[in-house]
Image 1 (cartoon, rainbow, N blue to C red):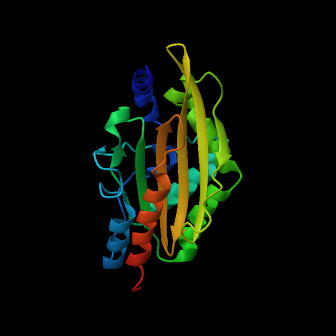
Image 2 (cartoon, helix red, strand yellow):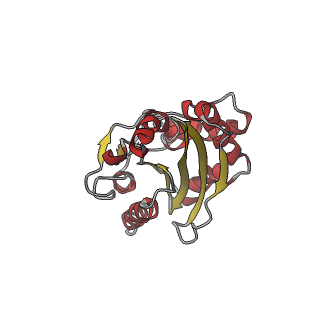
Length: 227
């Protein structure tokens, strides 16, 4: 029964993970050092548990019509025009029919100050509401028995140079039973790099998330070590 419920949630969970993390669009020109940062900042098959599969990420962005999303959306639109970036493939656990997933996007800014300016938009008090309303409007949110709830991720001390995260939970009634979907968004800065992560899981916060984040950010830091 649990696997059936997870399968029903799979197509629903595929929507929200990309709401903020996957910044689509053609990348700006890249230097050699930019390319090293971008290569380091994407999740790869070596970062996730053995047996996970991947597909090209489906890009999405905050809804312009949501008032609390306008500032984030404007910052993304500005970065698109100027900053080299790459998004990872969308990795998922086939044993949960894709209900457990991980994805990242990395930007190589010219300096740390510029990267911090993008991160500041996610530290703003409106960011959590933007995510909450975005999920509420998604297919998953429309199936929810209650409005989604958002809370800050509080165990990010020491994660990169700066980090902020939000965890959204959505209770969905599937075949008469309530199942909770967990959706985590984490925005980080390491030096002049901005790395955003998106995770989904069913029943609990994704256990592999912290290990994936630390592994990716370690590489990003090392890529800038000689600059």
